[in-house]
Length: 184
Image (cartoon, rainbow, N blue to C red; front, side):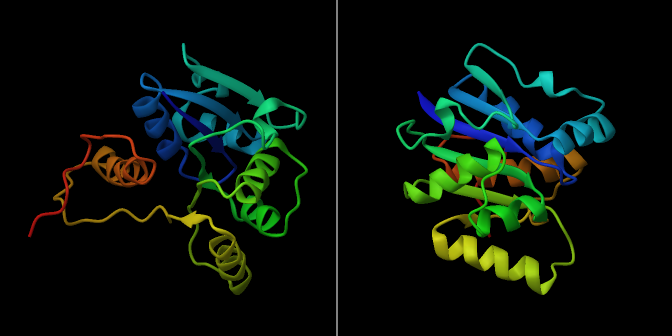
């Protein structure tokens, strides 16, 4: 069973995190960290509490508790996904600041040369945002802006969310049936 860390930060777009969680919870070991602002946005955007992220193969962590096994290089994971990724979190990860569990897990993931996927949901990007994203890319992170495509004839908001989640699942090596491969 694959092991993933799902980090939900204080950027709009928590619908992506929820859908990815729903797709992975039955066939992966999940470790979930929701920032304080991420919890606020879960409630604001979806009417959910952070306690939504529970299940048989799920372990939830407080973002304020840095001293946990998931923050150690000796805790192997297949991927860490920061979704949505706030620009503040991106900036702190890019500068190596680890004041929260999310930042520490991302820092360790880069240090260990493991897969870190960052899903920013912001527009427009400032020069500072772009520099931080370039820094993360150069450190080995995969940057996947929440920018769904429109060539699959999506008919609903859920279809647009599924587009992004399918792309992420492809990147972490999990079979998905949300979105078929592009055909011309």
